[in-house]
Length: 312
Image (cartoon, rainbow, N blue to C red):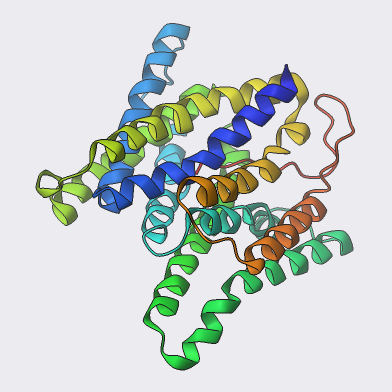
């Protein structure tokens, strides 16, 4: 059962990149798409909290302050950058770049914590991951010598997604420190709430969503992205952690980029270049090294650092 849920979660998060691409290509501006996503996901998660009869912390509890920060680092910044980036690069490439997030987490943890320092294994993994990222950008860098406009757009789109991965990594460090003892459903809802409070006014001011003419396909994709790819995926993720441990759950890090690349090629007819295959292999290998992720081990006993998986 757990193996099936793991594959299901990896497939859902991999498909999220496709839904984002369909949304922005269907006439929904990036900030508006993310505002719709966080609002719908927040409503869904709030319903789950009511069904589970969970209690909210007091209004003056410190967790609300950290939820504001996590809402920006874990939702506003990465969701918006990934969505904007997918207006310039393929959904598969975006998924591969976000897959490098655990590598950035290890780098930040070295400087921001006292017990997660570099080791030779981690350094090798980081080097492999960065080589993979460079290879992904290689075709566009080579075209820059001819001032190719598409190459420039691709590079900016890719850099936006890389910054999103760094933002996810930063959020992971703070989340590990400041969310212990709280319901995972509440933490997810709190982040969506704070993100929506920032994104809805931003959408109104920057993009005037009432002037947009989205396709029905785009609206359906955003709905699925919010309810299935965001709210429901969180429940699957924490169900897995409770039953098989954080390390085995983190195997989803290997699944979602592969699913995203396959769906992008099959459904959206995105080209599959050799640089994407090589970059994906190097980044996945790098993630395995920096996290010491293994198939073995027992529940609750991770080998090395199990990365906090991020919902794209």
